[in-house]
Amino acid sequence: MGLTTLLTFIVYLIGMLVIGVIMYRRTNNLSDYVLGGRNLTPGVAALSAGASDMSGWLLLGLPGAIYAAGMSEAWMAIGLAVGAYLNWQFVAKRLRVYTEVADDSITIPDFLENRFKDKSHILRVVSALVILLFFTFYTSSGMVAGATLFEASFGLSYQAALWIGAIVVVSYTLLGGFLAVAWTDFFQGILMFLALIAVPIVALTQMGGWDAAVQAVGEINPSHLNMVEGVGLLAIVSSLAWGLGYFGQPHIIVRFMALRSPKDVPKARLIGTWWMILGLYGAIFTGFMGLAFISTQDVSLLDEFGINVVTEDGIQMLGNPETIFIAFSQLLFHPVISGILLAAILSAIMSTIDSQLLVSSSAVAEDFYKAIFRKKASSKELVWIGRIATVIIALIATLIAMNPESSVLELVSYAWAGFGAAFGPIIILSLFWKGITRNGAFAGILTGAVVVLVWGGMLEGGLFDLYELLPGFVLNLIVTIVVSLLGKPNKEIEAEFTAATEKLKEY
Image 1 (spheres, rainbow, N blue to C red):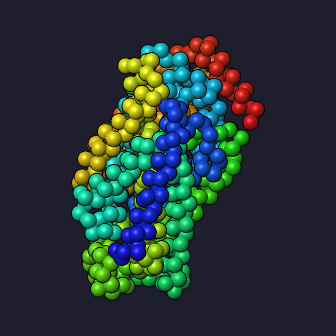
Image 2 (image 1 turned 60 degrees about the vertical axis):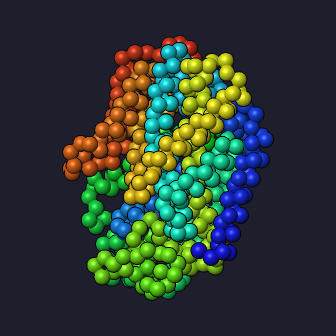
């Protein structure tokens, strides 16, 4: 990497840390640290949700999957786009209203406890445990993505790259809390969007147009052009099922809770949906065109940029398909632009890690420390407990990521399934069904989490090739409804549900 590219990259990192310092001065209590005082504008909420959702998966994992396996991997993107839209359409406004009605809940475990008037704290504790478990894996995926970026761009060892990335993202999350996370995510979301539009367009121009790109890919591997060739119905259903995960992702739906008003949801939905659709298109075409582009490049040029290639069946391929966006940024652009594009990758990675660390630390501070050990803890004390938890969780995630063979997509898919299966049906039923009970919610959360944890260990092939999110989600839904029908919520819970429904009509 040239000096100009490196300097551009460093300026970006300093800018993120400056935002953290500024927001540190605006963070006075736990509500500020965890939810930003419920004061996000539609644009910030939408791009923050999108950036924290997509992570390094959008710039590394998805292009890498398309590069390696072709357009058959695009089904996942379709499922995600539909799921994100439905989440904004049906969950966002209701959750924003209900969390305020339910004793001004500021975390998902907090909302579930208040929603069901659970004096035993069992829902809060179990929810917090699920969050800590799966977010540790999710955060680890971000650490792997960050290390991949630093390793490929700076020629560092994987371990050194891993620790540098971890230190940067923990620093500004530690300082500014939710406001730092939301505003850095906003700028990172813009940068990611521009990068995903620019890279495939420039690559397409270099390759002589769309027809030339399609012809080149077809000559290398015709199956890469077809979304259904070699893909069974079960594989398509599994890929589309990724969209179900949105309803249960704490780091995404907390943005709904932080909106300044439920009236802002339509505008935020419009911004967020288009951001996602265009971003996914950019990621898909980056991977698609990368296959043809890399195969025609001079090896000495690739070596000059430190791009690792191997030969498979006589075709020149990237050693790690998940580095195709990095390769494009180095080969096609001026060093200044290259530095900005590499910063976009780091943006995608950091915007998810910071959100996950924040939700995890809030679970420790609000849902363990305050709820169980120190009910009268001051706001300042809770903020510092959250900051300490941020460091500890990041450390554990970094240790998990120490294996350089770790795949970003594999780690993300596991954590995504865990949250979607454990929380998705509970969030939906809590907002739309008066009859759901505490016992039903508790049984459902356990069912969803356990199914995801054990599904991978079942028989290979056939039905059990199905992505664990789908069976976990469906079984959670069934168990929650059945157990809830065996009991009945009390009058106070029903009255609050009615009050939230009536308040919703005001917007």
